[in-house]
Image (tube, rainbow over all chains, first blue to last red; front, side):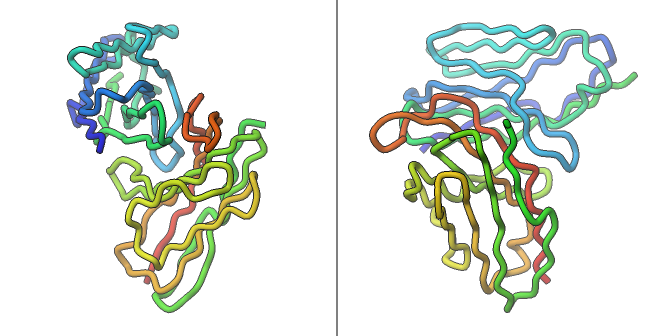
Length: 112
Length: 119
């Protein structure tokens, strides 16, 4: 089955700096790659997603890049703010089967 | 309405109790999911229903019994649980297509979860 590895497990950045989280996946049939943000005691919420026919997607301060050949994708957060502090999960899903597999998570702390 | 509603928010039960978790969505999504999340870990898939039929069971112990009575509701029946089953149980839904609903077409929307404590 699919295996998603996520690094780093914790990330501490100064407010205003950039944060980068990297994920690799094992199943070349995966074609949907969402990123979820989960604040303490809250539900995971989608912040951005990308499909395998696109190499990069941006939404304001958040961008995701996908390298299908290398089977890795990354989340970039620019101009970080304290409210960006949370746990971020990458995930991967195949075209068929509805099984979303999560990475291990990255705890991001933005220091004011 | 883009909400997935889960009840109860908190549940404490003994190992001999029978209880149920409920999940409801009115977005017309035809895939619904149960995930289990332990502290500081990612959500782990338990079950997937597509068009009200069980399509994935991730080898979950039979003390967890899912039910999808209609396209808007998903239940998780709990019986004879163990303390290690204490966790946050998340329901999710998504839009799908295809004759058996196996092709996901959009994001998974998660409910706020039911925090279960087994004594």
